[in-house]
Length: 99
Image (tube, rainbow, N blue to C red; front, top):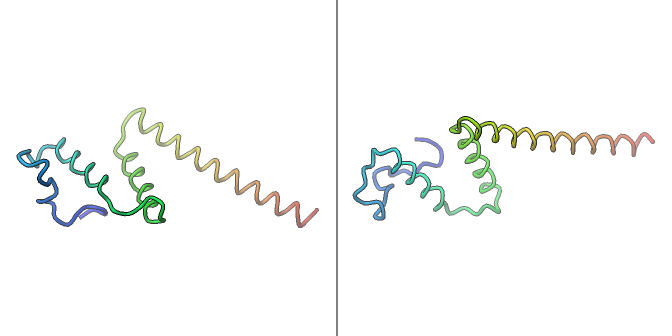
């Protein structure tokens, strides 16, 4: 079982999707979307934020073409921002204690 997947796969479609083919990929994708939307944890917690990063990583891994390029570009920009911030902090600390 994958992380974040509910224990009961048979009851996953629920009453609202009753009568649909559970083997249909579109129905499965919609059921996974409903599962993500009904998660109880708040996004204001560390667990919620990490879950959001996990959702983004899984979506980026499934993406093809220009969507994958955009996801890689977003990650590269985030890393560039982090590196820039760390570099500026190190320069500030060095100048404060050395100068």
